[in-house]
Length: 195
Image (cartoon, rainbow, N blue to C red; front, side):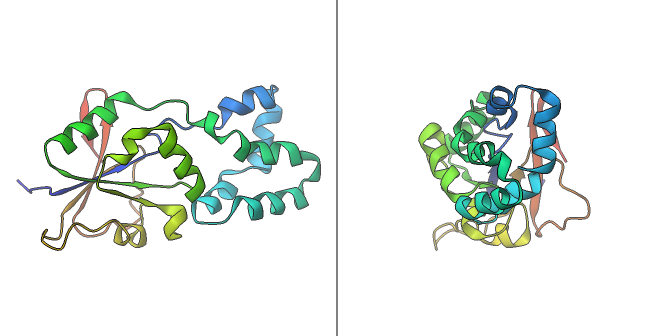
């Protein structure tokens, strides 16, 4: 059986719940209008660019120029971001903390803008417990990619190069190449499921 020396946890939807509908169901009560806003204004593609390092000031200015009548809700996306991450997944957090308590080498990998991850650390103190974290907004590469894996915090010089295990909430596309030695898992209520 292959020994796993390094365990990597994704954060969004593995350790922390994320749902932009939470504040926007209040800000745009009409469901059809809200869906239009997410499909045409604050889209997933737009948000991913902040995860890759684009500043919120630049992101907001771009959309406001294209959709000036939606300026308030464009700004509301960042303004109410903390409401989009209302709670942790206690079961996943317990697994991570248990592995750390066993002395396992645990780090994290996440698609967050640099400033929202700083905010998340204040909201969820357990994010300080792993040895380190690779934040896409800080390294300019969304996870999981070869580039972002390469930016993971390195163990001490006395430690051997680790073989990695990555936990992720979404199945990794078969078309996306995984770095050699990386193993992906997804925590589910009945235990661990290899993906």
